[in-house]
Length: 218
Image 1 (cartoon, rainbow, N blue to C red):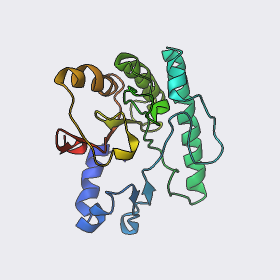
Image 2 (spheres, helix red, strand yellow; image 1 turned 90 degrees about the horizontal axis):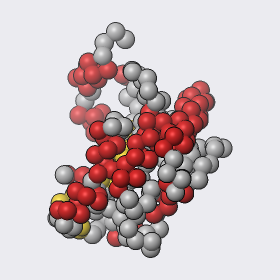
Image 3 (cartoon, rainbow, N blue to C red; image 1 turned 180 degrees about the horizontal axis):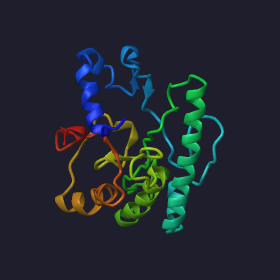
Image 4 (cartoon, helix red, strand yellow; image 1 turned 135 degrees about the vertical axis):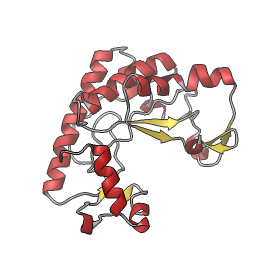
């Protein structure tokens, strides 16, 4: 335990077979009993409260909180969610549960830009303003991840990178092409903000393509 996380990870990887490494690449990561690695499921959501994991505080949707323009409130919401998530995770582990919606990483916040009211997931976002989105999402992320110099309370995820604002039904197949100005002034600023200032630890790629290439490949 005196070694850094990076060094411990290197030692662990060196002991894993190719099959075991592949088994860690899905959201439902297999247990590796010989190395004492428990099962872990990465799929979790907390857009406005710990989701799908029993009773939890349910805050207003992101689009509603964004209307307050209140950064301090957004930080507090993130912090409360992280406290509840950590408590729930500890209880799940004590009860031998390590499946879906029991972990400490969360696929939130959604920082896509809400440009078309017909997009059914617009309520997950902070609206159509890239600046406001970056400011509020950063506070939410800092609340979720905490300020300990060594450990995270939880791990936040900025999604969906990038240029995704619906339509939801076509997101697995459509190819997006926007102007350079729109890309850098509208779609990317919030991601830059959450990475540089909030140090978000995880990014989820968008499902669509961008100029012919998978967003996850950019």
